[in-house]
Image (cartoon, rainbow, N blue to C red; front, side):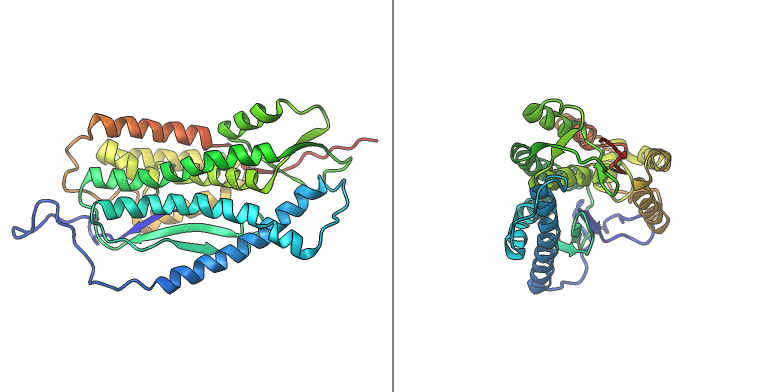
Length: 327
C-alpha cells in the first residue's frame, strides 16, 4: 500500500554532476521486468482473499449466527468473490495510481506486488510498487505520493456505497462473546446512516463482504496517509513542509504511541512504524529543489489528503464486542 524508493546512502538524493541536466535521476542498472512474479503473487492473493471472503460471506449469510448456513462449500467459496474483487480493486487502484504517476514522469517503477497472507480478516498484507530510481523533485515526489491514496479512495467510495446497500440490520444474539467490533471512520458512519439510519437497541448492521472490503480500504488509506517517513503521507508532508516534516514525523510517532493506550489494535502498526524510522531515519531524503515551495494547486491537494485522512481514520479499529446478555 505504498512504494519503496532507492535511497542515497547519505541523504537520499544527490546533486547532479555538471554533465547531468538539473532534474536527472540516478537510475539503478536496468533490470528487465519479470511479470510472472507479479502474476503469481496476484493469483495467490486472489486465492487468499477468496478464502477470507468466503468466511465473511458465511458470517453475513448466518446473520450473527442466528440463521442456519444452508449453502454448500463451493457456494460459500465462490461468494468470496464479493470481498476479493472489492479489496483487490481498492489496493490495485492505489498502487497503479503510484505506478502511472511514475510513468508520467518517466520514473522507473515496478508493477504492483500483491502480498497474500493467511490473516483471518484481510487475507492480504496489501500491495506495493518498487521505484528503482531517485525522485529528484518535490513536485514529482508529491504527485507520485498522493496519486495512490486518491486513486484508492475514489475506488473505495462506490464500493462502500454498494456494500452498505447490500448489508442489512440484524438482531444480535444473546451472547456476543467472540465477536469483534470494527471502529467506524467518519465516511463509513455517514454511509451507514444514509442507508440504515440508527439501528434499534439489540440490533447492528450486518456488513456485506463488500462493505467490509471498503472498511479495510478506508483504514489502509488512513494508515498510508500518516505523515511519517516513507509512507505516502510522509512524502506529502515533506513536499509541503521541507525539513520541518521531521518534527511532524516525530510528533506523529508520539500520537501513534498514545493511540496504543486507546486501542491495542494500534500496537503492531506503531511497532512497524518505529522499526521503519529506526531503519531509514526520521528525516525524509532530500530533493534538490527542497527550498522551492509547492504551487497553490498542490497545496490544495495536500489539504484534500488531510480531509481524506480525517474521513478514513478511526481511533479504535478493532475491539472485542461488548458482551450482551439478554433473556
